[in-house]
Image (cartoon, rainbow, N blue to C red; front, side, top):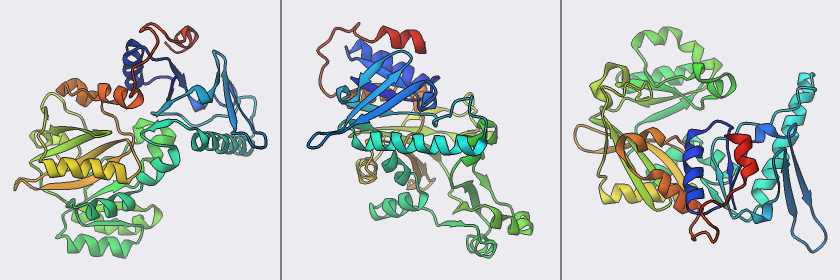
Length: 339
């Protein structure tokens, strides 16, 4: 059985789940936001016995030792019951739920894609990524992570006033929604007047890297799916391709040099992941520069625009052995609840 841990609405999971069922695998979806109000989780342990975990929702009850693979996609955080009105009580309950779920993920004897949550949290740290990438042979841009105004000013001057800023994490977006997404932006000279504002929230600053094209490299296990994004063809996307202008920013497959492709695989493995979405820049002089890796980055738009079989590769990773059931075998009660 394959457990897909994600939000109720997730087009990536919808596609992969349908493909897994076509291959004959049994799938279940679980969103931690349903816990504890609409789902129950229990661990039973006895002397000289391994812990037994049981997950019960409004649609199914499952012994979690039956799960051989977990796709930890895009889950929402646990949410206390609406009946609990006190905010402090809600926060305490939700923290206890996180604790129990983390205990579950760490104790399950299953394949995790991309990885167990604690491993993913470490892999998401910018300092860890950059240090490891450089040690593996990637070129990286000069970078400053800081909330010290004087260090920001000094870095801005050292890089000839050509730096970009980006958040260390999209905390506001995660808390309030996509309207708080902050893009990568050039830092103009006039921003130095407001340098003291850096004190209030740490930021990431990097030397600006001239671009021929930007690269989104999706690593799934040992497979590498590289796409080039012609972000320089549109004013909207020149500094951040996430300002999507798909009509005027072509997306194409990209042939990575073999040693760069191997470095990408090595980086994902060294971070303890089985999946990673890597952002790089191909400079006008033909050199490659590593920017960052998202341990759980989106990929479906790249697959649809380029035809790269990323979803197939994820299915392969979740189901290395052919299923013994018929292609129609799945839990109907799950389908009724989540489709």
